[in-house]
Length: 198
Length: 147
Image (cartoon, rainbow over all chains, first blue to last red; front, side):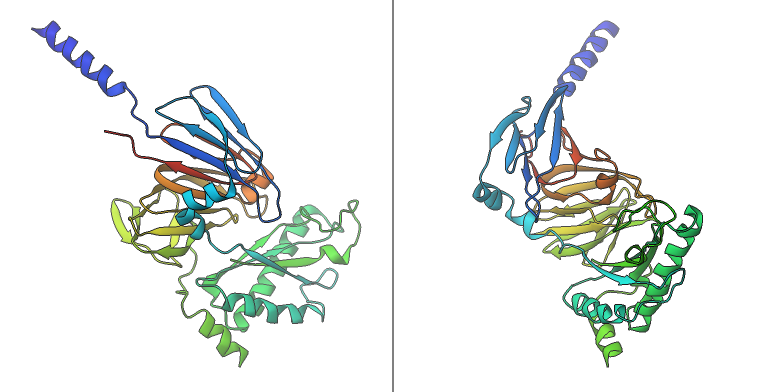
């Protein structure tokens, strides 16, 4: 009796472990600038590398990934709902600072007007303000200065009527120079704040 | 004048301060869309923050798009179930990790700063496969298994 129950449970476990998966499809798309990245699809030790525009991989009845080439039209009809729901791409604006300060250059004020226009066109806009420095001082000083610059721009955006809860500030220090330089070099074009409208 | 204009623009967006555990925000919500969080089913709309472990569920008429803090974007078509399994992002260093699962339905993905900093740090799982993302845009579809 006991052995029968054990056998029965064992049989049920085997049945439960038979994987039921639906068919799946993955397709790589070119980005807005035409660049195509890479997706690696893995299934039970099988790997498929997709790195061409509209290269696809299909899994049918739990098969290993099968390579396929789709057309733009296939993708647009098959994925119409998901593609139409992609949020509007984030857009970046740059404002510049005087050396070693959180004071903006005169020209940068003009950029704020463009930012307000961009905000008006979005349904639920939020803003990320990202400060950057040149490579003149020490890293930790630059981390602090870059955040201070971002916060300074955040205050300016608040003054223009954007709720503080919709603004986040970040400091990237000297990690992301627009113009690559050796350490210790002053470069006005790197003393900037990026305003990312999303 | 421009103060008033900006305030009017943002009146739609509820001025809820971003919380530390918010990892993204719903930017697009059409038709029936819910977020399942801590066992509760919350109706979703544009401007709603998204957190790690949230499940986004769209109805037959629904679709939704989320922008994450690193500028990654995910959007789900109708009849979809999408889970944000794991999300971390350091806005100073850009180090982070992003794992999401599409249980069923359709998904469009645009990778962001996490993948730019660390190729492969974003993964999308489906019932049958794992996709490692190396800086790209792609779409995924998962049909429900035949009974």
